[in-house]
Image 1 (tube, rainbow, N blue to C red):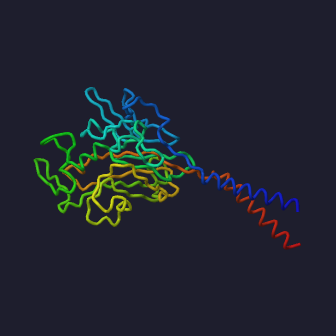
Image 2 (cartoon, rainbow, N blue to C red):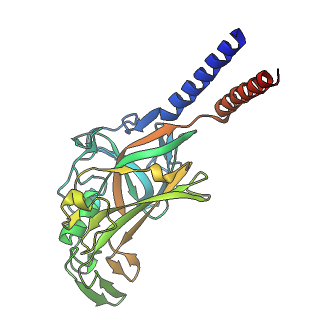
Image 3 (cartoon, rainbow, N blue to C red):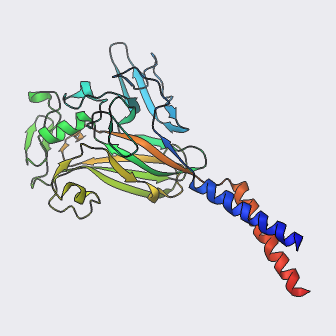
Length: 307
């Protein structure tokens, strides 16, 4: 009887431990990063590098290139810029909401958040965790380009064709620039779960959301009702469930727009995130301990029946 009591206690402990580990969540809110008010970090350490940066145990890829007369970056930056009104590239580090996100998605003016730009984007999740959710927003640069057709340039230097829904198009020496001819424009983002690090490996699942949606048919947009079925450019922080990414060790990000030119999408390829939530998953040793205890229980029962 004493042995059975000890065994039952061991089982209870193992199950409780596993349940506790599996349900533990961590929110990566970027507040562990250092910034002065109204500033950002885009990988500029003074020299060309591809070091990336880390917050809350997650790694965000970044590439910064310094040339003699100019520099450029891609990947992930972090920021606490609050400018939601100025158009153009010079305001590329601002969320359109005007700050970071609180735990319930309201604006945290002066709070830190991450800004992404470019085509090669990935996040390596902390070891032994899975993605649960994040808050998503446009950048001011992209939002005003879509809403107003204004990207801070003028005339022939405009990158965007026009405002979403305007059906505009034109041609120049390089080719044709065109929005959707029926006004069904969109700017779509997809998070792609990967079985390996650095956005590599097998697909584990994906999640798609719309940073702007001017389509007549929004039936595939899970957030359409949030905006009353109306056309919108996302201006608030949006809660995105990432549980469909499964057991991904990393996720990559892709963007798609209906504003197309001869060199690809004209919409600025930017967005912002905050409060990336991850959940711990038990280490293999923990699962092994639970399996061992379960095996011992089964063996004990078989022995008891054979006596």
